[in-house]
Image (cartoon, rainbow, N blue to C red; front, side, top):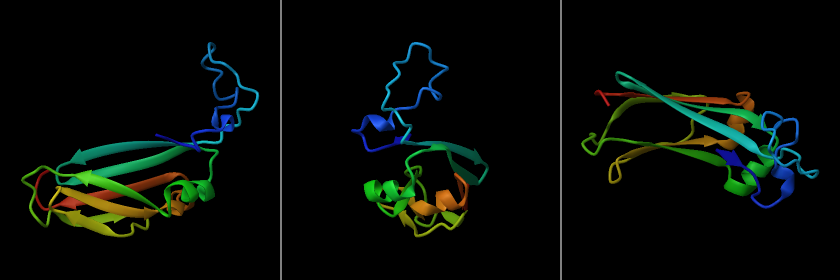
Length: 133
């Protein structure tokens, strides 16, 4: 996922970032003002782990807060037959509010935007369920 202002040319990658793509156009205004975010999910037995990493941040927390707000909201969808109280614990680096929304079969985890910066571009949320997912 990429976060940027969506309009300025300064969010385009600088030539040093795109050298692996020899056919790419090089924009003289490009300044790599974007945030690249990767998500990975792993499920082993009763535990689901969601990892968010940020390999490039030329956008900054201040701009992200302006554009999307103070928190990232992670939504973990569950099977329709999931119980009304599906998990034993939700852990992560400074996780905020955790809510199970039975009507849609999802757990939401809110994490302050600046936690990712504090954790040096990596955030891990682990959910341990009562039964196999």
